[in-house]
Each structure stands twice: as structure tokens, then as C-alpha cells.
Length: 501
Image 1 (cartoon, rainbow, N blue to C red):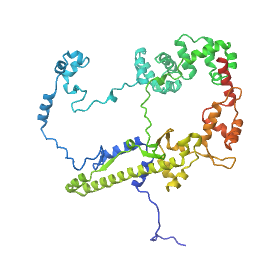
Image 2: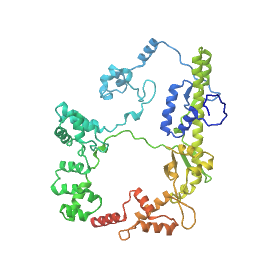
Image 3: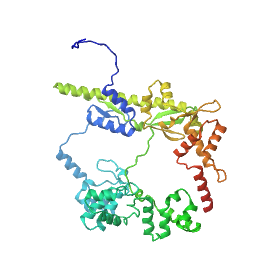
Image 4: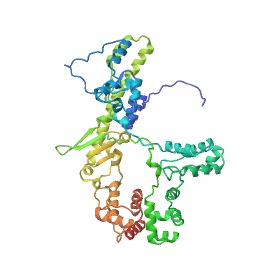
């Protein structure tokens, strides 16, 4: 059969995701901080968008008076007449300038426009933002750089010190290899080690350590308590982490009383000295949805208005500008801005309604958890919620990402309520994996030294008490996920605590 080009028509149906539809889908999974940042970018780019601030004016209220236009010269003269100097303000309080402005008396005379009035307000009548005056903790790098410049003499040593400071993590530990740094800078390894030794004497004591043992040793050396037996104790820290006190006493050659004294000294040290300094801004978690008990006993679900940016389309401005637009490029730009503005307002409203719809279904299915606690948390999947509200699973997954809900039981991420199911041995309802983990923790917290529960024993108790059919391997996995040691380790810990007490 010969191959030859030809024209052919075919009719088919397909789903095409437009750029705006893809953007709407992306808006669903944004947190409120990311959403506000996106909206701010659109406000700067689109002249037809404006933020809705405050309630709308009543119809019967008079429009605000337009400000009178004056020249720049008249405005300057008028402001100069209103400005008072420091001496005039001090005379009003019947005192001297130094008592009113102890630090800025001279600056006030040079720059009178920066002064505040008697109520603490600025020239425009706005009170100062108190958040701007909150003292921040110093940065660890800045604190160490200032000390390095004083103790190191040559520029080469200061360059090495700067790279060592940049190699610290948040806890103050050195996270780079000295050999690699020496090769990178083309310096001798002995010079890098000498600079490191000098920097290890900086404040806070313990920084520039390469492991926990070295960090504690630096602090003990500062206190003149790093004797040979203490050094042997630091060399055997893994045995201390395992609570193997008997083996630790044999390794370092001391009795129980001396060991308890040394452990008391170690507890007074700071294994992460760098955390005392500011490592960056921390953001508080703000709930996107509030759940409260109503007067009739039903749950009331409300969106947090503070996390929902409100934007409006300025159609009056669009009508005014479109009349003056001349070229096709200007008309196309205005048409694109209007279309984008309408899409954004509609997408924000759909996003809010979708979050509210998904949250309401989660609250409906987890009524037992909200009423009685985590033991009544039901297993729930994305598919269960999606089928109940007639949405796709991917939509529910995006809505629950980076969203938080405030309940009478506390603040939770929406993803928290989606847990796997564990079958019941008696044919009853399934149990949530999170509820099973909570019960395992309760059993371990209540155990005594004479009755340490193994993973097999915990599995038997769960099956006998609540009919939870869970294997020993599952109990071990949940226990390790909660950072709970094994039964052997727990028995050793409780025994050592009892002996010390």
C-alpha cells in the first residue's frame, strides 16, 4: 500500500484545561498567606481591581467631600505653619527639651517633620504601629561575626571564619567538613583548624561543635569541669541514650553516686546553643474555618473572613477609561484586565464556597470526634467526602491542603481527619488509625515498672477491649512513629528513674 499525503476531517470530544481553569485549580491548594500574596500581585498588575476595605456606605449618606487642590508651595507653607519645634512642645509641658526628648532633641531641630504630636500620632493623624517597636532577637551569624572580627587579626583568618559561620546550622553545629573548606579556600588545613579552635571560644559556648559530645565538652571546659572521667562519659553518650547505666559505669570506671552527679551537671548544659538566637520569622497558624456549637446543639461552620481576600471590579473606572481608549492595543488591554478581574472575583468566591462545603462534610462525618474526643475519630478517606458532596477526589485533596480548622478540641489541619481504617475482629465498625495510636499511647503512659507491655500484649489488649484486629508489627510501627521506645528500653528507663529517685 503506497503512502501518500491527504486531508481528513475528524470529530472528537476532549477536555481542555484553559490557563484560567488551571489557575483556578491552583488557587484551591494555596494557603491564605500564598493566596494574599497572589492577590496583591494581581492588584498591582490589574488597574480594574481594588481591595474591598470596610463596609459600603449607606445610600442616604452624603459622599465625602473632595479635597481642595492647592499648589505644592501653598501646601509646604501650610505644613510649616503647623509644625512646632522641640522648644514649643517642651514649653507646653513646662519643662526642658532634654526631659521631653532625651535622645532626639538635636535631631528634632534638624528634622521637625518627623516629630509626633502629644497623642503619639504622626502628621497625618495616624498612631504609630507598635509592632515596629518590638525588639527582635539578634542573629547568630551577626553575633559571631562581631566576635570574630575582634579575636582574629589577619584578613585570611577572617575569611576562613566567615565561611565557618556560614556553615553553622540553626542549633550552632558546624555542618561542613574542614578538609573540603580548606580545599575550597586554598588554605592549609592547620590554619582552618586554628581558626575553628579560636571561634569555639566565642559566645554562646558550644557553637562550632561538630557533634553533641564536642558541644558539651566545650561547655564543661568553660566551667573547668572537663576532667578525664567526664570526657569518658561524653565518649559513651550512646550508652547514656540507651539508659544503660550499668554498662556506662563499667565503661568509665565510676560508681552510681558519681555517675548521678555527672549526669546532673550535663543536664545543666545546652546541647543546642544556637537556638537562643533568632533563626528567622515564625508564622502563627491562622485557622481558615471555625466550628462552634450552636444554641440548638448543632455545629456551626464559619469561614475566617480575615483569611479571605476581598476584591472588587471597578466597572466605573473601566467605563471611564474605555471611552478614552483609542488604539486596538489599549482596548485589548482593558478587555483582558476586565476578563481577568471577573475571573479572580469568581474564583475567590468559588474557593470559599468549596472550602466551606468540604469542611461541613468533614464536621458531619466526624461528629463523634468533636463531641467525645480522639477515641471516636472515624476512618475517613478523600473518596468518602468527594462522593458525599459530589466532587472529585483531587478537588477535595487540594481544598484540604494547607488549611486549618479551629474546633472545640483544638486547631487541626484538615488533612488530620483523613485516616486509614483498621478492621474490627467482632464484625463491628472500623477503627481509625489515629484513634488506635492514641489508645496505644494511653496504655504505655499508664504502665508501671512491674508491668511493661510488649507489642504483642498491646495488640491483645486492643483486640480484647475494643475488638481492634491489629498485628504486632502494626503496633510496633505506630509506636515507633510516636517516638516511643521498645518495651526493653522503657523497662530500663523506668528502672533507672526509680533507682535515681
